[in-house]
Amino acid sequence: MKIVSYQHQYKQSFIDLNLAWLNKYFVVEPQDTEMLEGVEDLIKNGAEVYFAVEDNTAIATCMILPRGNGVWEICKLATDERYQGKGAGKAVLQACMNYAKNKGAQKIMIVSNRVLGAAMHLYAKMGFVEVPIDNMEYDRVNIQLELKV
Image (cartoon, rainbow, N blue to C red; front, side):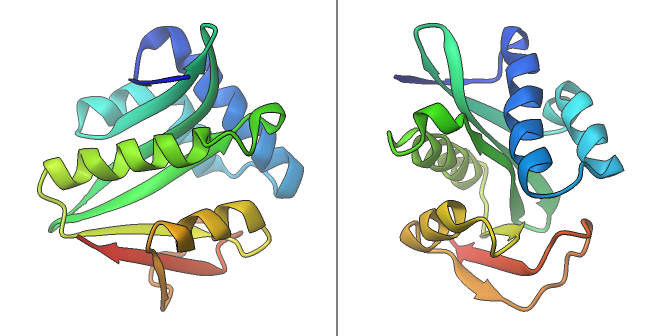
């Protein structure tokens, strides 16, 4: 497995990996579609996406998005269910965290839902702590986490 930053050849994998978990647990909201389809525009504006790639197949992905004032947001973390437990999700999350730190991040935040047990476990393991929710961009959000860096 190797970790690579965004390449256009993996755009559809970014979309498909994320739609898989969104459709399994929730509904796809308009802002999901906008973010997934507009990933390359977000990258032009400072975001970055990483992929865990095995045998030329993207098995996990994660995006980091600048929110201003030293705050960065982890978005669209997804791992192909067939590859869960191999460390791919942790690897792309760590790549995003490193990217933000290198860009001067003071805080990294995540909004999520408690039903995503594997993600909740990973976030806790990586040092994220629960904070009051101040980003209700999505109907599914019932937890917000942050990590001061």
